[in-house]
Image (cartoon, rainbow, N blue to C red; front, side):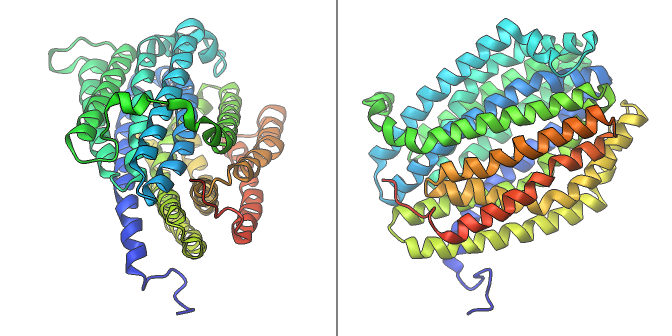
Length: 453
């Protein structure tokens, strides 16, 4: 029916969407809840500790983006191989992702251990903030190696309809992290009071538990990831050329985008400790708001990838338009929630200064108006365009507005004109309108719907 814009009568489509969307959303909800409690605990030590850990985590954030890009490119192939019922292809791509992810994590670990002080110092001119950040980074950075296993195995499960497995393992790891945070940061239950170092130890052990549980689930159950390690790494580089053709724009684009986000955070850091600490609180609401968007966008990548792999391009075009409408609806619903309730979140951080709380609340209100743009753009760039390997167009649409609009405006408004944080944050999202115009146009052209395997 023409008026059925969301295809609500197509129960098969929505069963596929929910099978991917719900586990990813639940995983993100758990992660965000734990992150929120984590930052509240660290914020209980004061603004300096909160800003220091936030600065240290910028390196982990950049690594996450790189690993997401590596496994995101691999997921495109895994989804299409699985649509063709080619498990050998899935295994080869999993092995390649593991090798590349471990290499990337090793580089980031070396940087953290070797020049961690320089990296943290980019985000604050205060020696006390840098010292707390380095203290955290020296311990927590060893968890990068566990992430290099978590990301590829999580990607293969999400691409093959078993998204609940990384959700469960991630939930267990986060729960361990939360309990250890409570014990080690403040010295509860007879544990030593370690402050920032306690938070780092908890993060490291939580990542190890997540990794171990995910491997256990992968090999105990009948999953697409269940293969001998020798099979995963046999002729591991035979698929490197098509992988690079699709993944190089993803990796390069995401890395440059992450550098842009780090540059943006560096601008916030130069605006003062209050502003940077406020952005760490805003990041909590950011993650909470993004749960539904990531679920819809990730479902789009998997469902469209499987559909293209099964040689059903006509269905893929119809599904792509449905996902656009779903993401727009999700954006409006979440925006209403953030503008009415999310603005009170900063006041949970009782040990931060009133100035920090006020800046965070005002910035969150600004965020609410940008959320529909976030939702649609994420689905287009990460879900629709990448599902068919149209990664070069996705990278251009994402990066050009960031570097030509967002960052120059933030520098001008924040550092040259000295306006408050909410104004600088608003400038960051003007680029979203440009992304939306070109992203919708590219989607409607239909050039993204290609078979890769």
